[in-house]
Length: 462
Image (cartoon, rainbow, N blue to C red):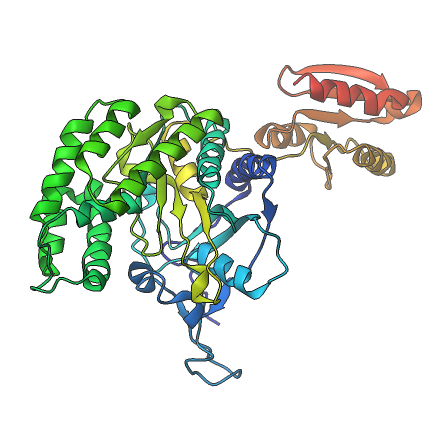
C-alpha cells in the first residue's frame, strides 16, 4: 500500500500543544470578559441548510463551502442542500427565530470555528477555517446595548495586552444619509427609493468597505463597473475626511451636523453621538474611539451603529473585531421584527497580531510536577504520590521508562515543567522526597507528609 503524503488543506492549520495552549489563554481572557457582562454560552452545528445561510450577504454567499454527500442520505435538492457556516451571526438569527422561549434581551456568546472559501493570507490572519468569538444582544433597540458591545470589546483587547488600538465608530444610517444628500443620484438613469437602496447604497457600502485596501481610485473603479454614479458621494466623503483630520469627537460631531442632510443621516449622527457618550460612561477612554465616516462594514444586513477595531501601527492586519446593529436579519426566519446588535472578535487575527508584536506566549506544557523514575522498586510509591498530588489539583506526569536521570531532567526543562520529584531508595527509607526546582536548579528534601503543602508553596512562588 503506497504511503500517503501527510498534509493539511490550504488555509487550514494544525495546532500543536505549545501553540494551542497559548490560544486557549487568549480564549479564556475573552470568555471571562463575556461572562462579566452577563453573556451566556451558545453552540450551533457546523452544518446548516444552505437556504439558511444564503441571501444574507452577497459577498459571503460566494464564500460558502457547500457539502456534497457522496454516500447514502437524502437526495440532493434545494430542501436538503447543506453547507458549512461562514459566520455565527446567521445561525444565531435562526436560533432566536426557532426557540421562542429564549429570554429577551437574549445575551449570548459563541466561540466556534467557521469556514470560508477565501484566499488565505496568513500574514493578515486570514484562513479558510478560523475561530470567531461572538457576543450579541438580541431583543432591545436601546443604544446602550451597542455601547456595551464597544465597552466589552475595549476590555477584551485591554486584557489581552493591546495598547495602541482604535475602535472605529459610525452608522449605516449616516452612510444612507450621505447618499440621500446627493441630488439626482441615479443608476443607469433610474432613481426610485427602492432602486437607490438596493442598487446604490449596498454596492456603495461594499466598495467603501475596501477603501483602506484599494483607496479612492479603486472604490471609484468598482462603482463605475456597476454603473453607479458616485462623484457627489465622494465629494461629501472627501469634505468630511478633510474636516475630520485630527478632530476630536466634539468637533467631529459638529462636522457631521453641518455636512449631513436628510432624516436618516441626522438619525445616524444622533446614534453615533449617543453610543459614543454612553461608551465613555462605561469606562472606554475617549482616545480609544474614532469617529470614522469611511467605516461601512461590507455585510448587507447592518442597519445602525457599526464598529470595528484596528491597530493603526499595523494596518496590514486589518480589523481585530467588527460588528454592528442588524435589526432586520432575524425577520428572514420569523414574522417578528427583532432588534439585535453584536460583535465578533477574531481569534486568529488576535493571535497573528500578538505574534507580530512579540506578545504571543507559547506554553510547552501545563504539567507542574514530573515524578522521575529513579529505580524499578520505586514505581509503586511514585504512583501513590501522583494520585495524591492529582487529588490536590496539581498537574502531574510520571516517567514511564528506565532512563537516565539526565534524560528525565532534559524532558522537564524542554517542557517547561517547573518541579521534578525524585524518590530513590534512601528517600523511601526516610519517608522523604527530593524536589528540584528547574528554574533555579535548587533541590530540597521534604517529608512525605509535607509533600503537597511544599509543592503548593513552591508553585505559588514561581
